[in-house]
Every structure is written in C-alpha cells, then in structure tokens.
Image 1 (spheres, rainbow, N blue to C red):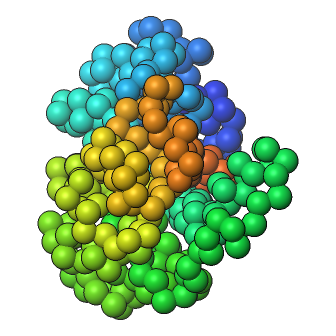
Image 2: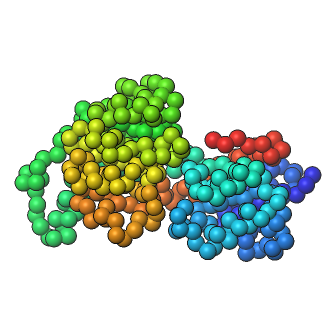
Image 3: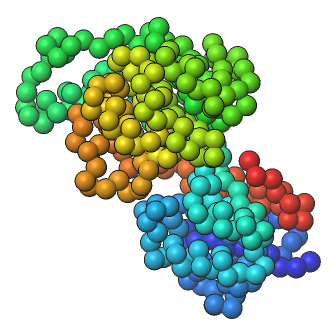
Length: 329
C-alpha cells in the first residue's frame, strides 16, 4: 500500500498527534510540513490541510508571502488529489484553480456555524439597542439618554429575512425566534422549511424584502448570490430596516449599500465582510455612526481549530476507505 503524504502546518501536526495512525488504520502515512520537508518531498504530497494558521491574516484579495509559497506547493504537486480548508466557503481563487486541475477541494462546513450565528445575533442586538450611540457617548464622557435620541422599536413582532439555509442560517433562525422575531428564509431551492413563515428562492428575494425589518445574509458566494442585494433591493425594505452581513461582501453592491445608509433608506448595518478585504481606510463605512464594522472575524473562536481538525480527520478516514473519493459538503 502506497504511503500517503499529507501536507499540514506544524501546529496542525502537533494537534493531530497520535490520532492520525488510529484514524487511517494500517495505511502508511506521513505528515509533511513546509519547514521539515525538502523541495523534492513537497512534490510528492497527496493531501493538504489549509488550517487557519496557514492563511493567517491573509484575505482572498491580499495574500501573504508565506501563504503564496504554500499555494505554490499545491500548484506544483503532481500527485495532489485533495485539499481541505478551515473555511466554510470555497470562494478564494486558489480553490477554483485547484479544482480546474482535478484536485478535490472541501470546506469545514459547520465548524464555526454557531460562532458566526452568535456574532450575527450580537450585531443585530447591538444595532437594535443602539449600542454604537452609547459607545460614542461614552467616548465623549457624555450621559446621553435614548429618551432624547429616540426610543428604539421592540424586537418582538419584527421580521428577519435570513438569506442562506446552511448550518449558519438554520442556527440563526433558532436564535432570532428566541428574541421574538418572525423568520422568512431565502435559499437556493426555495423549498419551504418549518422554521419559517415563508420561504423563497434567491431570485425571488425582492418579493419578501418589504417585510424585512432585518435582512441577515448568511449564504455562500455563488453565481446566484453575487451582487444579490443592490440599491433596488434595499429600497424595497421598510423604514427603519437594518442589514447584517456575515456571508461574503460580494453578496451586496457596496456602493449601493453606502448610498442607502447615507440617505436613511437603510437604518443601520452590521458588516463583517466587504467587497475588498481588508476594507480600505478611505471607505466611508468606517466613520458612519449607523454602521458596525468588524474585520471578517465573525467565525473566529478558540475552539474552531480543534473542530476543523476533527472534520478533516473524519473526511481523511472516508477518503482512505474510498480510495480517494470524498464528497464536497
């Protein structure tokens, strides 16, 4: 039986420890790192794990030198058959490039779903309870009551339109219903779900936007979701409506979003993702008093690394049993 060469980071190798032989049974295998392997050995890798420490602070638009070197190894390895990544989405250009050359690429779907849902809920509650207003007042050492600024509406009885019905969207529906919101779902198939009072396909999203007090984006970036929310979509939402985006920045036409926030057509927004990342310092979104900006960190949590390793090992076990066949989630 041929030896299986698996490219991982040093941190992932330490996390895996003695789990790998138990997972793969009798199949001979070797964990390879960029630091420990020769250039010749890196050409012989069969499988690679892209863990969070490998991507580091890189984005899909700005790639660090160390990540680019890792990518170059993947591009140059003739035996490479499968790459698994820590992320829930597969929209980084390298993944399409590898897939075009016959490499199977899988994601860690669900690893950070609860964390992202918690972050989206936190952003929604922060906007609903005017926390940015209080934080600015605190910075000025100013006792500033909402009685003077305008009382926020009760959440109970409002409607959240959740776009995307993967692990994040499903968990989000549970959370927002706890605080009293009704749920409408937009998903690829448009098939109804029991958790929602209505369900539409992505292409029919505009039909339900007049009911959307909260538009929460939790969908993957695909051909059907790219630029899904534009100025026309935002204009359909009721007065006082807000947007939460923990999906991908390209799901929204950013300039249309900025215009809607400036005009008051959209009341506020919690934004974790942007059309170009990192968000440029010149973007007006940084300084808008009705916007909370976070740096694509909705899914960051101390427990994610172990969850990704666990998902990878489960898939690796299946991959070995099926002689290299592993299904993309």
